Length: 489
Image 1 (cartoon, helix red, strand yellow):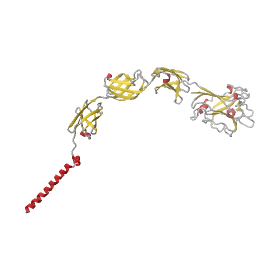
Image 2 (image 1 turned 90 degrees about the vertical axis):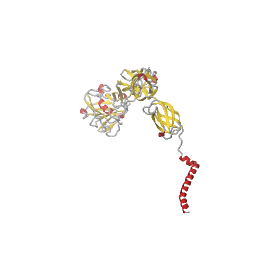
Image 3 (image 1 turned 135 degrees about the vertical axis):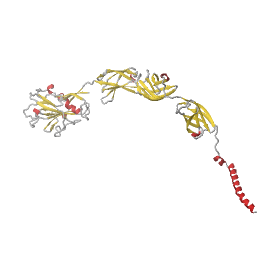
Image 4 (image 1 turned 180 degrees about the horizontal axis):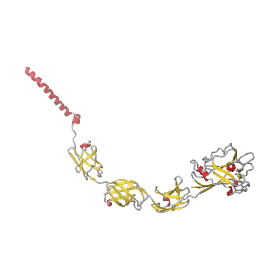
């Protein structure tokens, strides 16, 4: 009995273990979730349906479409002519592969597990590239250099087209082609292409431009007719835009009167200064060498036109309606000095910085006088734009004066109503130049001339005989003081 119990104790654990294992097996066979979770998926036969592109250079990315690829790139073994190919992306139906260095044309082969698929052929070709075109704009006949890769060293194997026209190749290496812009090229923007063994490389944005070969004449004045000779101009007047250079570098439009593809006729427009001539055809602009404008001097004549613009100041007192101007003599017995004369010329149209070549003021004699000398030192008011005179005490004498001055000495007798060289000042150009050269002087500003008795006229008496000139009056406007000024543009 004891032996039976001992046997049962030995057998029972073994039986329980066997029962548990049987239960697990039965449960596993009856549970589909367990099977789905633990079964290794079967690898099925691969297929390759297409590749895109089917032609390319080393490094080309190729998309391979098919079925039953591995979603893990490393599990897809791809080759071309037994040379391993890298898989960069993978799904069960699309692989992206990169053609490796050293590859030659051949079929794409893919293996996964124990299955292999032989796909379409991929053709490895040398595709040229263009990295630079120098220069980037040129005229017909100009030489250009195309830099890139995989050109042919045989001239005829490189087919070059510039803006739609074939160009002649004059030199070639694997990385450089020399050619010229072909005859008949149309001015404008376009492409440069190189084709080698049927493979095309393109560079966009090349500009065919017109060319200027001659200006006739090379200099002229406003209105001078100018003939511009060159190539690739517009064949009609409207196709050509011509401009000259303005005083500040701005474009001054010129009128085109005749045009062919090799010649343009125009004339120098008002406002033109020395500088290049520009021609625009099909939105492409070129410039010539410098065309010299031989500027004719400009002479302007300005008269005092209101009484308040020719004044006298005696001991600081202002006289705005004297009617006549005492030059180096007393204006009345109540004063013991000759007056300072002020002449304001309003709206003087002289450009800033213009070179004053001559300037004088013409007076008209108001009375007869003898030959006693008179001396006046003449200044300008040192301001950008002279303000009108007022009756305020010292309004004229307190105004600043230029550093430059000139002395006018009158020794001739004057006869009433004379208006000639004896009644004309010396040249005032150096004095006025100081004002015109001021940075803030603007054409149209006003200029103030100040005439101060000096020398023999600094101390006068009632018996001193000076000169007396007409001021502006409405009754005799033709006798008014008159400024004549000449400047070079």
